[in-house]
Length: 211
Image (cartoon, rainbow, N blue to C red; front, side, top):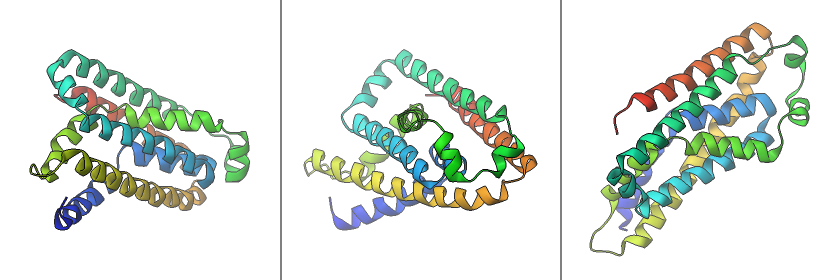
C-alpha cells in the first residue's frame, strides 16, 4: 500500500470512527456507570467485534451474505432486536438516590463481571451486520490491484482498529466528566431515556434499512 493511500485511509477512518454510533454510546455509558477501568473492558469487547467484522469482510464473508439475502436479513433483524432490547433496558433502568451518590469505584465493585462486560460489548458491536457491507464497499477503495491484497487488507484492518480504539478512550473520558453532572436522579433518568431512545433508534434504523 502506497504511503499517500494509507494517509488518505487514516484521514477517512478518523472521521468515520469518531461519529457517534452504538459502540461509542455503549463505551461512554459504561464509563459513566462503572468507571474508566471497567469501560476499558467494554472497549476491548467492541474492538474485538470490529476486528472480526473487518476480517470477515476481507476474507469474503460479505460476498456470502450478498449471495444469500436471507442470511443477511436474519443477521440484520437479530442485531436490530438486540439494540432495541438494550434501549428498553436503559429506558427502564431504576434510578435511586443512593445509586447516584455512590462513586464510580463502588459501582464497579457491585457491577457486572468483567466477562459479562466484555460479552455485552462484543454483542453490541457485532450485532450490526451493516458493518460487513460497509467494510466490503469501503476497504476495496484503497486497494492497489497490482499488489498482493492480503497484506493491504491486514494493514487497513490494523489501522482501523487502532483508530477505533483511540476514539473509545475519547468517549470514555467524556463519559467520566458527564458522570459528575449525572449525580442528580432526575438528570440520570433523563440520560437513561435519551440513551435508550438512541439505541432503539439505531435498532429500528438497522431493521428498516435495505440491504
